[in-house]
Image (cartoon, rainbow, N blue to C red; front, side, top):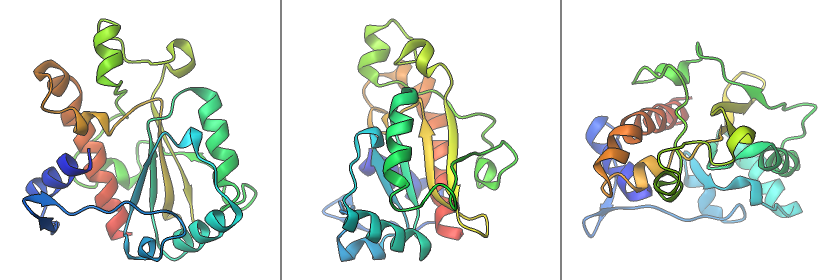
Length: 201
């Protein structure tokens, strides 16, 4: 996903993307890594299984309040949302930094591409095995949506795409033409808008 997305970002925008050995340079970081503070944005998958230690939470809070941007994706159902909300509250207490839905008029929906609604992207395995369904937890994940935690000035610090796997629309783009045309164009639109927002706010 990170390789394909970085290539598309370099093709569809004027963003400079570093390449090494023919592939985009990417970095895997932990909250305690000093390199975190060199990243304009970071992406985490399956955040419902996250567990932040005290030092993780402290460093993540410092990163986010200094202008960092965390995007979490691919978590499904109310239990995963509750679990992530509890963990991120260790870094950004709920009383000061509540989780709020992002309404369609927000600039992130139109940073480059017009996005009318957050697409529900299933894993390609679920999509194939279910005969084309998109809600991986049935009625418990019926609607994909976007939520965020913002700073006091309204800048998004933590972006959440819930009940969807946006990154699978990038990761699996070359595996199945039907999957690509069903999910990848909208998935890239959400991704590129989100990254451009992160790097300009």
